[in-house]
Image 1 (tube, chains in turn purple, cyan):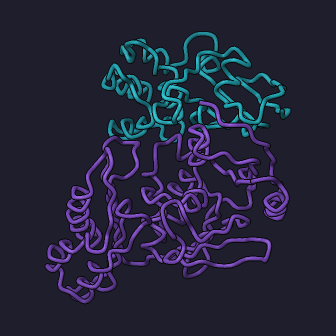
Image 2 (spheres, rainbow over the protein chains, first blue to last red):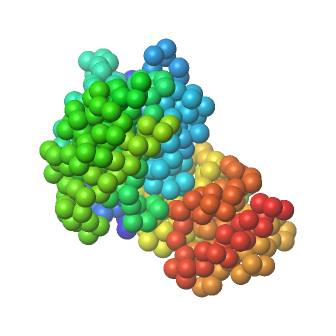
Length: 281
Length: 151
């Protein structure tokens, strides 16, 4: 499969990339290309110009920024999975980065690309949502920050403007909170049929600040608001009952992998397991 | 058309390529290195796996222009004189049946051991999750990789 024709420009800096986005015909950013190129090969995407930001080394890597980690937009999944700072301060995102696709995909795919793509079946959007991450975007008017809760508008649709670049993703350090990400899939390299992420704190036998989010249970990654409300301040033995509320407010797709009803079932089962696993960590 | 310089198996190549040319076709048709196969062409099966700057990647999901300035190793570049130890282990442990997945499987396995020289059996299986063998010869493939890891 061969993509339709396009022009190709290599960005030498973020400013240069922004200029190319402004001046080139029907431009599209490419970083790792592992979401975009498959779409282009299927001719579902036909950009006029590819602006390659994959060589902007300054946007790569993880930095300790006090109460949060600053993850460069071009940080590849493999590098996030193996990064010592990420493993120490936000083990959930390091772990989940290691579940994206397969090793070859993780050597190329980037966190900024994954978020900008906005696929509700992708792992890192869910992780950023459950962590209350902040996405930093640069555009012609300068830099702005977008909360993950307001970033995902719909199916493959995000708050990122066409002339903006994700330069950084800020994820709060999770401290002593337990965490889990359970991903149900048919084959090892597949997208999640359903994924459940949980970050849970506990003290004196009761649950404090449980946060739960879903992959592939609707048009965007979703927070499990009913579960979170049921767990707030609840005793540990409330998990099973709370997990029964997991599919409230979700709108899971039916496709060749699973019916919507089976996804609802998976969400309830995996939520219980994920919260229990988070409590055990 | 774009002019690119790519070092493949230690040899520097300069070429004019169409922007949309995939790296795997540049290797196969441009350079005649047909050891790298095309299977699914959707970055699932892994038979097009090569090393780009030392890391395993799927050459069907890379543009040749993205490899400008990079070092590429294909299955042809792995052996230095005789067989590479991983190739010899695949032969010894019968890690192939039809052989179609083998070049990619070997490149992925070599990449795995560079990142994790002493993987457990579980880590080998997960490390090869980007490569499909339709003959389902996984047990012997895992044995071959473990044999190399354990020297």
